[in-house]
Length: 100
Image (cartoon, rainbow, N blue to C red; front, side, top):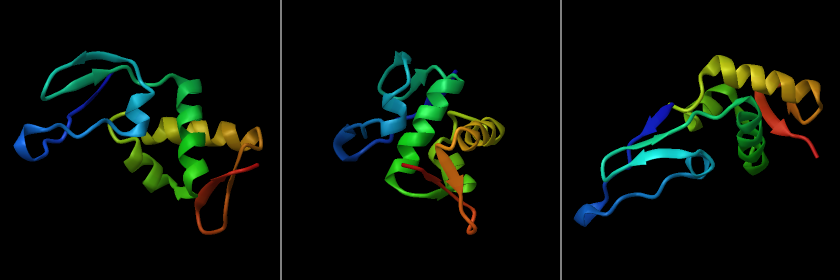
């Protein structure tokens, strides 16, 4: 499980969940915390493809976007599997990009 705190805005408004968090199943939610399931391997691959369709990113950027949701090792493994299937590529500057 992964938890994510919603950031407070002025006047007590809550900041909405980001696009990645919207794809995960919420187990519990209140004004201060959201508890959701961590993505399985296939869900993580879909999330990575969605992120990389927006722009090429290096491992550090992907890990930052998925902070608290997936470990660097799981991200690295998912990227390796996607590269084997020719769905992503690693450029010379260390950025992963979605193919097609």
